[in-house]
Image (tube, rainbow, N blue to C red; front, side, top):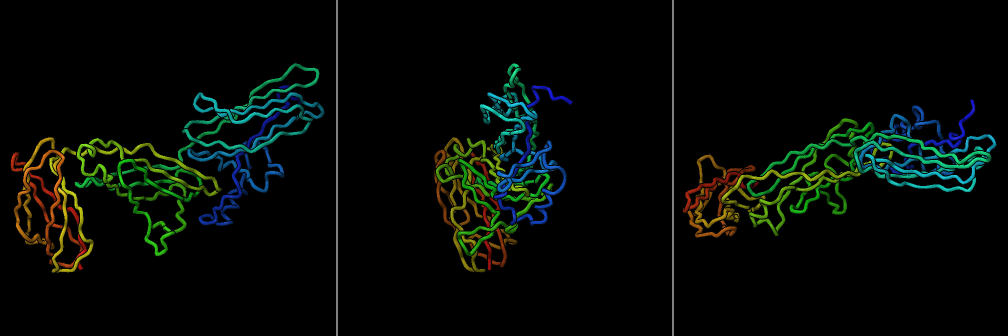
Length: 397
């Protein structure tokens, strides 16, 4: 069958991954080799030229899915399929169309392209948007005895969500937040989570996902060194957030915070493709308006039974008016830690946003991990009463 003149310049595209990315820490050699041995290797019949085989591998069709956050690398070859006609003034422009917007990728200009000869390259494009991506190849060339030929060829790639992220927040009376995050691998390959961070402008973030190591330069995931996540497998990560020192004692600044930060996730797939995504800002639930707050400034983590210890508390007036608080220390017969000293204490007048530090004594009676007893704070002006339970826990040995 005779090839139409405009189709003499054929275009083939195949996805590739670098051989230089090491996945041996979570994928065995046999498993890795199996990924590249089954099925055809690309969207069309295509093979890498010798100059690329040392550093690149063509990806089989079943793993051709493209995921948000990955760097999509592809091999493109444009061939003069004529048996004898030489092409002149050859122009090949590549654009990536995303959501009705075209992004320039590369342009090739050749004076001549002999019959059965090709121009080829390996190019990369970072997938930043969750929309179908269309590679547009705009071709132009001359063949002796004919007018200039132009045409376009299209290659469409669907972009999928790589990781499903679910979050749940727990708020404390001290404005601390415990964030529980659940990640599920939605890809068709195992992945290794290299980094999971929470970035926040207003909070100091502590990760609860690492084991303490004697070697300070090494941190180990609590999930082990491999940290492999198979398809559809889920894993939980935990973070604590504490308001930064410059706003911690300013109630109006705390109330104005609407977001707690973004999750930043870096992974490597089983075929060696790197990925990186950031979530949108995680919203902070606005707490109920409170007149008084108490922060634990200092408390020992471990004390001996029947040995007196101290705790330092900071009491803050969060209302828009002056108050005259007094504290009541409540001991019950079932408590394992008891307050010592004066049970009722007037703190004097406090203006809006003012804070005061109070040091109190406690006496532990029973071994174990126990919470400090109830504290009541009563405003003598309005008679409003606030109860503070389980402000902190102490290990009694």
